[in-house]
Length: 97
Image (cartoon, rainbow, N blue to C red):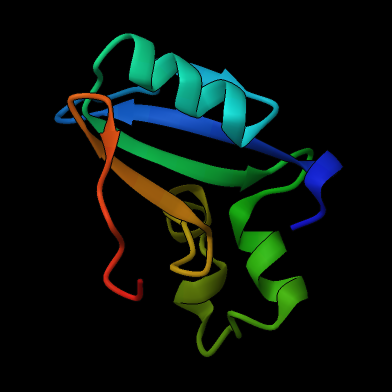
């Protein structure tokens, strides 16, 4: 994603809603560390849905009418969106390094 067209959204473990949104990864990471938080920080496109972003990037292709349904689009998130897991303020190492 283009650095000026993204935001970082923090969801605490077992939370139904996000608790914070940041314009940079560094701001988000600092807040998480200062407060010893556990959860997931995810990079989201700004002014664009995850569904549309994934289609434009070539990460998702519609294969059936279900793929265009409102419920599908509303719940869509792409595995290609960057995300980081934190436990008590410390970033956990990702599987791929």
